[in-house]
Length: 384
Image (cartoon, rainbow, N blue to C red):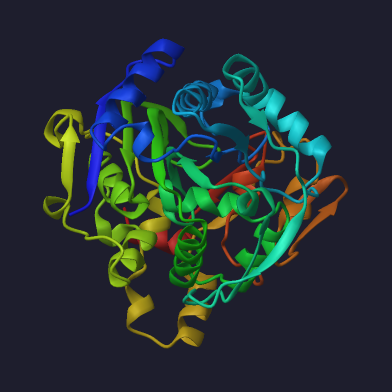
């Protein structure tokens, strides 16, 4: 039976975070159960984009600092790293800017951790994958002994929820994420891709930043929501089941949980997971807002042939809509669009919805909250 440990944490004050993380991991055997002396440990944080911690888009730096200190206590060598999303190349300059803004540079200096500036990329054969037999990844993943996964609890416009499994998508180098979005535009296939990547990464421990999460239109333009927890597990798939249970999502609403369960990696029944520390009944957040425009009208995907569902998706699925009065004309949306269907005209984005794959990368990577997600008119009327 998989174990998931929950500890309360009311703020990001470093001593409170470290105490809560320590408490949570102790239920699983303590840090020394996962990290041995002299081992190099990649602390895989969520650094989706260059945003300050108070925007709750990225893993809070107090989690990186606290875990780095705990790894050092166990005799290990912590290395903080990630590959941010977007159109930009995976460069040292990009990493420096992201580390600085997201608070990771400060976390490394205070804890004694190393920041990874290794921008090498490598193709790795992975015959065990269901749909990915070859994975392009960042080299630091292959140069460490262990990976500790540090996701943020958030909703997600494409995958409904962004947690432990989804966070490992960050080991795919920068702009290659867009390539994978294009290759796997079906949500179920994309979920299997995420699971393949997570299985490839093999994190020995996942510690979720669930102090303040993001609800609504996540993973970047949602609303901060206090959850007040640290959630830990050696099984990232089981952790996602517990975390979604806490915020009121059902297993059938989350593609990565559906596919993980089908592959025997977890159970969708929370009763089959051993919950340690705080009880679920005491920590549930009943009013956590879900990305409703994404989860509606998916029933036909299991009833009709794929070529029919793809045509229907173009007609009835939500679509990106640009707020021209807010848009700064930076062009990130166009450069980050996997199918290249956004064009900048007179300094503003124009999208060809007939070719849009509804990955919502434009929404996810806009730093000015200038992209809305809307339903077609007749769907809005039907759901009234």
